[in-house]
Image 1 (cartoon, helix red, strand yellow):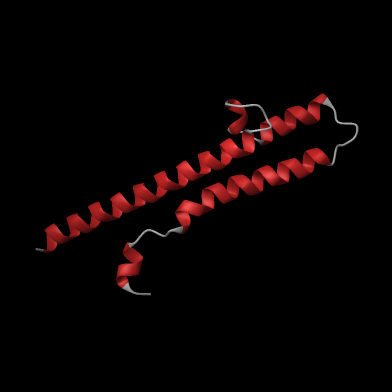
Image 2 (cartoon, one colour):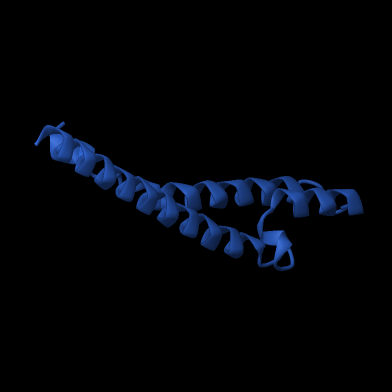
Length: 98
């Protein structure tokens, strides 16, 4: 791997958090659908907990979309944080050597 490739933050940071939230929500949906047709109030409550943080802001029907957006925002924040941190570290290394 080239040295300049190691300095660049990976683009996967933009896609992994939303993908993790999406997979989590799909698994939660499969689990809740396995309770049908005799779904209980307790199962609905567990489903709402499984869709956190989306259920804090909207009803459970739209929570996966909110989680996807939340994951995308989290990915952008991580990407920018690592990018800025690497640039700051490269700047201090250059100043100390020269």
